[in-house]
Image 1 (cartoon, one colour):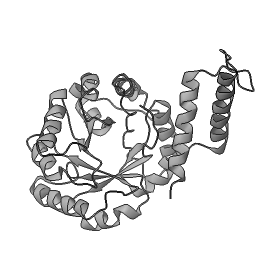
Image 2: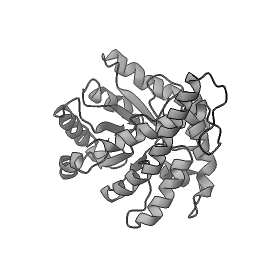
Image 3: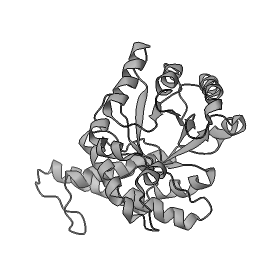
Image 4: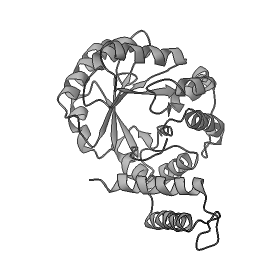
Length: 288
Protein backbone atom coordinates (compact mmCIF):
# COMPACT_ATOMS: atom_id res chain seq x y z
CA UNK A 1 0.00 0.00 0.00
CA UNK A 2 1.03 3.65 -0.27
CA UNK A 3 1.75 6.35 2.26
CA UNK A 4 -1.05 8.53 0.89
CA UNK A 5 -2.89 10.21 3.73
CA UNK A 6 -0.88 8.58 6.51
CA UNK A 7 -0.18 10.73 9.58
CA UNK A 8 3.27 12.20 10.06
CA UNK A 9 2.95 12.11 13.84
CA UNK A 10 1.20 9.93 16.41
CA UNK A 11 1.16 11.63 19.82
CA UNK A 12 0.74 9.41 22.87
CA UNK A 13 -1.69 10.79 25.45
CA UNK A 14 -2.10 9.11 28.88
CA UNK A 15 -5.66 7.88 29.34
CA UNK A 16 -5.60 8.67 33.04
CA UNK A 17 -4.68 12.36 32.60
CA UNK A 18 -7.92 14.34 32.02
CA UNK A 19 -6.08 17.65 31.58
CA UNK A 20 -3.86 16.22 28.83
CA UNK A 21 -6.82 14.54 27.18
CA UNK A 22 -8.76 17.81 27.14
CA UNK A 23 -5.90 19.58 25.31
CA UNK A 24 -4.86 16.70 23.06
CA UNK A 25 -6.67 17.73 19.89
CA UNK A 26 -5.12 21.19 20.06
CA UNK A 27 -1.53 19.95 20.13
CA UNK A 28 -1.24 19.76 16.35
CA UNK A 29 -0.52 16.06 15.94
CA UNK A 30 -1.81 14.30 12.84
CA UNK A 31 -2.92 11.38 15.02
CA UNK A 32 -3.38 10.70 18.72
CA UNK A 33 -2.79 7.41 20.52
CA UNK A 34 -4.77 7.44 23.76
CA UNK A 35 -2.78 5.18 26.05
CA UNK A 36 -4.42 2.88 28.58
CA UNK A 37 -1.42 0.56 28.71
CA UNK A 38 2.06 1.60 29.89
CA UNK A 39 1.01 5.12 30.89
CA UNK A 40 -1.61 3.82 33.34
CA UNK A 41 -0.91 2.01 36.65
CA UNK A 42 -2.75 -1.28 37.13
CA UNK A 43 -5.10 0.12 39.77
CA UNK A 44 -6.19 2.89 37.37
CA UNK A 45 -6.89 0.72 34.31
CA UNK A 46 -10.67 0.58 34.68
CA UNK A 47 -10.99 4.30 35.31
CA UNK A 48 -8.71 5.22 32.41
CA UNK A 49 -10.61 2.92 30.05
CA UNK A 50 -13.92 4.48 31.05
CA UNK A 51 -12.55 8.01 30.70
CA UNK A 52 -11.13 7.32 27.24
CA UNK A 53 -14.36 5.69 26.06
CA UNK A 54 -16.40 8.67 27.28
CA UNK A 55 -14.04 11.15 25.60
CA UNK A 56 -14.09 9.23 22.32
CA UNK A 57 -17.88 8.98 22.27
CA UNK A 58 -18.01 12.78 22.49
CA UNK A 59 -15.87 13.22 19.35
CA UNK A 60 -17.24 13.49 15.80
CA UNK A 61 -16.48 10.67 13.39
CA UNK A 62 -14.99 12.98 10.75
CA UNK A 63 -12.09 14.53 12.67
CA UNK A 64 -8.99 15.35 10.62
CA UNK A 65 -6.94 13.95 13.52
CA UNK A 66 -6.84 10.15 13.57
CA UNK A 67 -7.74 8.68 16.97
CA UNK A 68 -6.14 5.43 18.11
CA UNK A 69 -6.14 3.70 21.49
CA UNK A 70 -3.27 1.60 22.80
CA UNK A 71 -4.81 -1.26 24.71
CA UNK A 72 -3.26 -3.70 27.17
CA UNK A 73 -1.86 -7.14 26.63
CA UNK A 74 -3.70 -10.19 27.92
CA UNK A 75 -5.62 -10.66 30.19
CA UNK A 76 -7.01 -7.11 29.72
CA UNK A 77 -6.70 -6.94 25.93
CA UNK A 78 -10.11 -8.33 25.02
CA UNK A 79 -11.84 -6.36 27.80
CA UNK A 80 -10.31 -3.17 26.43
CA UNK A 81 -11.20 -4.05 22.84
CA UNK A 82 -14.81 -4.82 23.73
CA UNK A 83 -15.21 -1.45 25.47
CA UNK A 84 -13.90 0.38 22.39
CA UNK A 85 -15.79 -1.56 19.74
CA UNK A 86 -18.05 0.39 17.44
CA UNK A 87 -17.07 3.91 18.54
CA UNK A 88 -17.30 5.99 15.33
CA UNK A 89 -14.39 8.32 16.14
CA UNK A 90 -11.91 5.48 16.67
CA UNK A 91 -9.64 4.73 13.73
CA UNK A 92 -8.10 1.70 15.38
CA UNK A 93 -6.52 -0.10 18.29
CA UNK A 94 -2.80 -0.30 18.98
CA UNK A 95 -2.13 -3.78 20.35
CA UNK A 96 0.61 -3.71 22.98
CA UNK A 97 3.14 -6.52 23.32
CA UNK A 98 1.72 -8.82 20.67
CA UNK A 99 3.60 -12.10 20.48
CA UNK A 100 1.72 -14.01 17.78
CA UNK A 101 -0.62 -13.66 14.84
CA UNK A 102 -3.28 -15.52 16.81
CA UNK A 103 -3.55 -12.67 19.30
CA UNK A 104 -4.33 -10.27 16.46
CA UNK A 105 -6.94 -12.62 15.06
CA UNK A 106 -8.64 -12.90 18.46
CA UNK A 107 -9.10 -9.14 18.69
CA UNK A 108 -10.47 -8.97 15.17
CA UNK A 109 -12.89 -11.81 15.82
CA UNK A 110 -14.12 -10.16 19.01
CA UNK A 111 -14.75 -6.86 17.23
CA UNK A 112 -16.66 -8.64 14.47
CA UNK A 113 -18.78 -10.52 17.02
CA UNK A 114 -19.78 -7.14 18.45
CA UNK A 115 -20.79 -5.80 15.06
CA UNK A 116 -17.64 -3.72 14.52
CA UNK A 117 -16.25 -4.43 11.06
CA UNK A 118 -14.25 -1.24 10.48
CA UNK A 119 -11.87 -0.69 13.40
CA UNK A 120 -8.28 -1.21 12.26
CA UNK A 121 -5.42 -2.80 14.21
CA UNK A 122 -1.84 -1.66 14.75
CA UNK A 123 0.16 -4.43 16.45
CA UNK A 124 3.24 -3.31 18.35
CA UNK A 125 6.42 -5.20 17.61
CA UNK A 126 8.27 -4.81 20.91
CA UNK A 127 9.52 -8.24 21.94
CA UNK A 128 12.00 -10.66 20.45
CA UNK A 129 9.18 -13.09 19.74
CA UNK A 130 7.12 -10.52 17.86
CA UNK A 131 10.10 -9.46 15.74
CA UNK A 132 10.49 -13.06 14.60
CA UNK A 133 6.72 -13.30 13.96
CA UNK A 134 6.39 -9.88 12.29
CA UNK A 135 5.58 -11.25 8.83
CA UNK A 136 2.75 -13.44 10.14
CA UNK A 137 1.41 -10.64 12.36
CA UNK A 138 1.41 -8.15 9.48
CA UNK A 139 -0.54 -10.53 7.25
CA UNK A 140 -3.59 -10.79 9.53
CA UNK A 141 -6.98 -9.21 8.71
CA UNK A 142 -7.57 -5.64 9.93
CA UNK A 143 -3.85 -4.90 10.34
CA UNK A 144 -3.39 -1.34 9.10
CA UNK A 145 0.23 -0.81 10.11
CA UNK A 146 2.86 -2.14 12.45
CA UNK A 147 4.58 -0.02 15.08
CA UNK A 148 7.93 -0.84 16.61
CA UNK A 149 8.34 -0.43 20.37
CA UNK A 150 12.07 -0.17 20.89
CA UNK A 151 12.13 0.77 24.58
CA UNK A 152 10.63 -2.57 25.61
CA UNK A 153 12.52 -4.42 22.92
CA UNK A 154 15.95 -3.17 23.95
CA UNK A 155 15.12 -3.76 27.59
CA UNK A 156 14.27 -7.38 26.86
CA UNK A 157 17.15 -8.13 24.50
CA UNK A 158 19.94 -6.15 26.13
CA UNK A 159 20.61 -4.23 22.91
CA UNK A 160 22.18 -0.85 23.72
CA UNK A 161 21.69 1.59 20.82
CA UNK A 162 24.46 4.04 20.09
CA UNK A 163 23.94 7.58 18.87
CA UNK A 164 23.47 6.40 15.28
CA UNK A 165 21.08 3.61 16.37
CA UNK A 166 22.94 1.18 14.10
CA UNK A 167 22.21 -1.68 16.50
CA UNK A 168 18.49 -1.38 15.65
CA UNK A 169 18.81 -1.11 11.88
CA UNK A 170 18.39 -4.82 11.19
CA UNK A 171 15.26 -5.09 13.33
CA UNK A 172 13.73 -2.02 11.71
CA UNK A 173 14.41 -3.46 8.27
CA UNK A 174 12.65 -6.71 9.24
CA UNK A 175 9.53 -4.75 10.22
CA UNK A 176 9.56 -2.70 7.03
CA UNK A 177 9.98 -5.85 4.94
CA UNK A 178 7.19 -7.64 6.81
CA UNK A 179 4.86 -4.72 6.12
CA UNK A 180 5.76 -4.56 2.45
CA UNK A 181 5.40 -8.30 1.97
CA UNK A 182 1.95 -8.22 3.59
CA UNK A 183 0.96 -5.26 1.37
CA UNK A 184 -0.07 -3.11 4.30
CA UNK A 185 0.91 0.49 5.02
CA UNK A 186 4.51 1.31 5.97
CA UNK A 187 5.15 0.99 9.71
CA UNK A 188 5.06 3.82 12.23
CA UNK A 189 8.46 4.92 13.44
CA UNK A 190 9.48 4.26 17.06
CA UNK A 191 9.24 6.85 19.81
CA UNK A 192 12.36 8.76 20.74
CA UNK A 193 13.28 9.76 24.28
CA UNK A 194 14.82 12.98 22.91
CA UNK A 195 12.58 15.93 23.82
CA UNK A 196 14.97 18.84 24.33
CA UNK A 197 17.45 18.52 21.44
CA UNK A 198 15.66 19.25 18.13
CA UNK A 199 18.77 18.69 16.03
CA UNK A 200 19.38 15.23 17.48
CA UNK A 201 15.71 14.33 17.10
CA UNK A 202 15.79 15.49 13.49
CA UNK A 203 18.80 13.29 12.73
CA UNK A 204 17.10 10.30 14.33
CA UNK A 205 13.83 10.94 12.51
CA UNK A 206 15.54 11.42 9.15
CA UNK A 207 17.18 8.04 9.72
CA UNK A 208 13.80 6.46 10.48
CA UNK A 209 12.36 7.92 7.30
CA UNK A 210 15.26 6.64 5.18
CA UNK A 211 14.75 3.19 6.69
CA UNK A 212 11.23 3.03 5.25
CA UNK A 213 8.96 4.19 8.09
CA UNK A 214 6.23 6.75 7.47
CA UNK A 215 5.41 8.96 10.42
CA UNK A 216 6.70 8.65 13.95
CA UNK A 217 5.19 8.06 17.36
CA UNK A 218 5.83 10.92 19.79
CA UNK A 219 5.80 11.06 23.57
CA UNK A 220 5.85 14.85 23.95
CA UNK A 221 4.25 17.73 22.00
CA UNK A 222 7.70 19.34 21.70
CA UNK A 223 8.66 16.57 19.25
CA UNK A 224 5.84 17.28 16.78
CA UNK A 225 7.36 20.19 14.86
CA UNK A 226 10.56 18.26 14.14
CA UNK A 227 8.74 15.09 13.10
CA UNK A 228 6.40 17.06 10.84
CA UNK A 229 9.30 18.84 9.16
CA UNK A 230 11.12 15.59 8.43
CA UNK A 231 8.03 13.89 7.02
CA UNK A 232 6.91 16.90 4.96
CA UNK A 233 8.45 16.98 1.45
CA UNK A 234 10.39 20.12 0.55
CA UNK A 235 9.37 22.36 -2.35
CA UNK A 236 12.24 20.94 -4.38
CA UNK A 237 11.07 17.38 -3.74
CA UNK A 238 7.51 18.29 -4.70
CA UNK A 239 8.68 19.95 -7.91
CA UNK A 240 10.79 16.91 -8.81
CA UNK A 241 7.86 14.58 -8.11
CA UNK A 242 5.55 16.57 -10.36
CA UNK A 243 8.18 16.56 -13.08
CA UNK A 244 8.55 12.78 -12.85
CA UNK A 245 4.81 12.29 -13.23
CA UNK A 246 4.63 14.67 -16.19
CA UNK A 247 7.61 13.07 -17.96
CA UNK A 248 6.23 9.57 -17.43
CA UNK A 249 2.78 10.56 -18.70
CA UNK A 250 4.23 12.22 -21.81
CA UNK A 251 6.41 9.22 -22.61
CA UNK A 252 3.53 6.83 -22.09
CA UNK A 253 1.32 8.91 -24.40
CA UNK A 254 4.06 8.82 -27.04
CA UNK A 255 4.41 5.07 -26.70
CA UNK A 256 8.00 5.24 -25.47
CA UNK A 257 9.27 2.24 -23.53
CA UNK A 258 12.25 3.92 -21.87
CA UNK A 259 11.61 7.13 -19.93
CA UNK A 260 14.37 9.56 -18.95
CA UNK A 261 14.03 12.75 -16.96
CA UNK A 262 15.67 16.08 -17.82
CA UNK A 263 18.94 14.92 -16.23
CA UNK A 264 18.98 11.65 -18.13
CA UNK A 265 17.97 9.50 -15.17
CA UNK A 266 15.75 6.50 -15.73
CA UNK A 267 12.13 6.90 -14.66
CA UNK A 268 10.31 3.60 -14.13
CA UNK A 269 7.19 2.50 -12.28
CA UNK A 270 9.01 2.41 -8.94
CA UNK A 271 10.21 6.00 -9.39
CA UNK A 272 6.69 7.01 -10.39
CA UNK A 273 5.31 5.36 -7.25
CA UNK A 274 7.79 7.28 -5.11
CA UNK A 275 6.80 10.56 -6.79
CA UNK A 276 3.13 9.92 -6.09
CA UNK A 277 3.99 9.14 -2.47
CA UNK A 278 5.82 12.46 -2.18
CA UNK A 279 2.84 14.40 -3.51
CA UNK A 280 0.47 12.53 -1.20
CA UNK A 281 2.61 13.38 1.82
CA UNK A 282 2.79 17.00 0.73
CA UNK A 283 -1.00 17.13 0.41
CA UNK A 284 -1.35 15.68 3.89
CA UNK A 285 0.98 18.32 5.30
CA UNK A 286 -0.98 21.11 3.60
CA UNK A 287 -4.19 20.29 5.46
CA UNK A 288 -5.09 22.78 8.20
